Image (cartoon, rainbow, N blue to C red; front, top):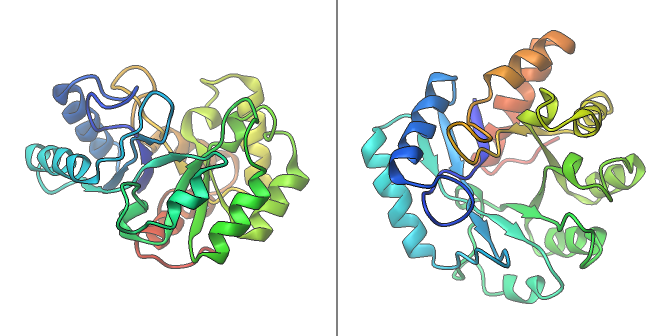
Length: 240
């Protein structure tokens, strides 16, 4: 399995507090069957800008050296979107914001409050610019989670949707769980990721979510969302 959304780089956002915790998180994910993890620190967030690509790369490399060859740690970022962001995106790939695994895929995050630019505009402009946007955890956004027609339209425009493992397994409550299930049932979900933030609080690993999906739907669906589609992302291939 490949985990596309992980806050494993220590001390730079609300993820791993220490290098030791980061090591424990990665090793636990490996024990849970993850062969690769994309380190996605918050970027452009009001509290965590994280625009220094070189520092993020050095921190990820240090973590990789400590844990060994597996799981493979890949670059990325969870990029907060606002009205000024598209103009900054024009400076890529030389800018500070990180696509997933140096591909055309971007993990983007909208505000929980729903303020800011219309997601349709953002997705359209990114696709026109040659990017492949992935919307982080739409089932956790109150203004978007229950709006299946809008989510379907965003997918039609070119977005792909990442749901969070703990949403599916119920730790975030009934509403995120039901929303995540609907996204799978309507074939609007493309990935399951852990969005891990600590070894105990929002822990890493995809095995429980995989088992849940395999039991409720099928092993084929579970494999599609945790392995097949994430592999397409890191290989910069389109998602059907």
